[in-house]
Amino acid sequence: MTTTNSTSPRPNSRRGDAQERGGLLVEGVTLTLGDGDATITALDDVHLNVAPGEFVAIVGPSGSGKSSLLAVAGALTTPDAGRVLLDGVDISRANGREKARHRREKIGFVFQSGNLIPALTTLDQLRFALDVAGKRADDGYDPRELLDRVGMGHRAGHRPHQLSGGERQRVGIARALVTRPAVLLVDEPTAALDRARSDDIVTLLAHETHEANVATIMVTHDHDVLHHCDRILSMVDGRLSE
Amino acid sequence: MFLAWRELVFARARFGLMGGVVALIATLVVVLSGLSSGLVNDGVSGLQRLPVTAFAFAEGTKTDSAFSRSTVNVDQAKAWKSRADVGDATPFGNMLVNAKAVTADGVQVPIDLALFGVEPGSFLAPAVSAGAGLGAPDGIVVSQTVLEHGLAIGDTVVIDRLGTRLKVVGTTGDQRTFGHVDVAYLPLRSWQQVHAGAGPGDEVRDGAYAEATAIALRARDGNRIDLPGGDAAAGTTSMTLKESFGASPGYSAETATLTLIQVFLYAISALVVGTFFTVWTIQRKHELAVIRAMGSSTGYLMRDTMIQAAVILTVSTAVGFLIGVGGGTLLTTTPMPFALEVPPLVLAALLLIGLGLAGAAAAVGRIVRVDPLAALGGQR
Ligand SMILES: Nc1ncnc2c1ncn2[C@@H]1O[C@H](COP(=O)(O)OP(=O)(O)OP(=O)(O)O)[C@@H](O)[C@H]1O
Ligand SMILES: [Mg+2]
Image (cartoon, rainbow over all chains, first blue to last red):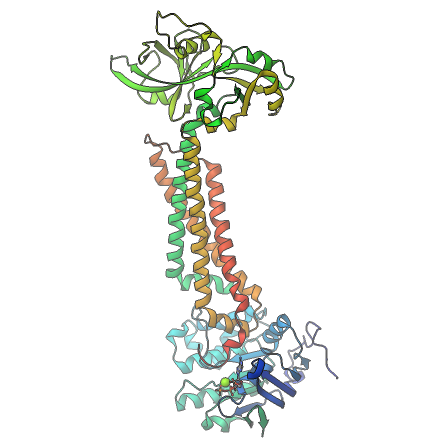
């Protein structure tokens, strides 16, 4: 056991220099779901190492455990065995309160359909993420600059219902990145998009992964977009392989 | 705070609907509060304004009929007066009569009066704001409300059946009513004659001049009198001034009914707010899961919802009170017993807001149960 400093409040508080970051390390993680006789091994001794600036895709049949892996890596679910290190910090044994803190300090989620807050304008989606994370604008990215970067600067005042699916997903990506997370977890970002739009979004994800030097895992069923990724892993029955 | 305000603006129609309900309830609460205060004034203001700590009634008198049934001997005042904690004790007569007022231009107006018989010069004798005080055997000092009915100082009141003629010599200048009937003070001796049923020229029966309804007691200092001890010594049954309000006709039933309605309104308001925020939280379940996945603490989300509840409750209570007070001010000019008093209104506003917040707090407990994991995967 090397790194068990999960209780110290802010291990890498000087996170300005992207080179110092640790990325994501998953070691021997096992997760069983359900109870009684109906238990399912959703993750079976999974090992995974994603470096900062690396864009990893995970493919696999439905029910193979892809979302479960994101949940464990994203401090949403506690694994039964194994360790998860985010940016050098072991989060696998954290309690609910600590997990929430790890999520807001280290993780950005991009969800299937954007999952934007209906009441907020595009710009406010990003400001809200900073507010939730308790970050001042100079800790994270400048929301306006980031919106320009993802090509949504001209939609800053629009609400989600006024945006197309692809635009929502761009805002979702900007919202996940605005807090400068160490790890970006993306769950089927193109499920609701046509082919051209899907390619745009994954291109953006690849670009931002390198630009923001973030360790990105993307779960997808969309094989047309895999050529943008640095590495492709496949998941079958809870087991991960190259 | 970031989200709370923006959501209030975004979902203003929904919040406005709930706020409207709360505002209507607040209006109703103001009206009922005014009615309560008005009825209390109408029922017992005559007693409230007496400088009395307690009344000693005839032994064994029940509260609900104390003023109509009790008869004491004026000498019992002496027994009370000799007690160390009693500053003063004086006989008090109370009876309701039907009468006719004869105005200056000879018009006869029926009027009901609560006759308060007091010794002129005793501590019960009323201060007058206009006219003369108590003294002349046929001189009465009346509540301001009598003058509002069209009588003037100098007019005559004739008691039905007896034919006793009384003259309005002065007014207290404020509302003094008892059991919704205007109070007229008169000298105890005249009261005893009327009480004994003796009209002008009639023989007054033996013992009538020793009778009164109760002995009015005033504490020596503070507000404390050893009532059981005094009762034992004087052979009376006493109750504090406040307890004696229950003897005003209809008083207990009226106040209990209005209190009950108000309690229901507070409960309804709290339930409306609680239900709204429960539905609101359930509707936002997916959104809340997303925000929790983003790493927000439950405290952050609960605080946001409580801020929304506080804003809505404060604004709608204020609006409801403005409407209620505006409408109520019109009512105070009618004969309806209605009085807007600040302390009960402040209490009502605090109750509405406080109970509404409690209702919202019960609802936001659901936020704890929202699983951030629900944000992953499918849309709903
Ligand atoms: N809460 C749960 N309780 C019990 N079993 C669960 C639970 N959630 C998921 N599972 C099971 O765990 C396994 C892995 O589920 P997971 O959602 O990770 O699959 P997935 O690869 O993301 O599938 P899809 O491609 O359909 O999204 C599945 O067999 C699923 O039925
Ligand atoms: Mg899935």
